[in-house]
Length: 129
Image (cartoon, rainbow, N blue to C red; front, side):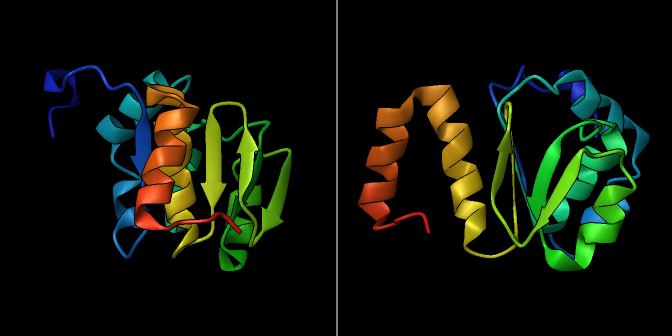
């Protein structure tokens, strides 16, 4: 993918899934994510691996799936709260599944405002746990 050809993003949502570990090693993706580390970012499940490989987890407290705790520690994090939703600066990391919606709302709140994110959550009937 030619990341330089993309419009400048306002925020990033990094979903997990079976291919996340593989694509996290892509040098162009790592450079793209590292260059946009200050943007509001939500990473759910194994999507946190993309941040880790890009070097954007260093010194942060992160959440995520319990089965990735040891892997997340390997990225120089300050702490891992397995199975939890954690916000550290512009980054929210969540376990896989429904908490991914919370990561999306985190990004939406920072890009379009808290009121817009709350309205979106209300429209779909979502109440964070």
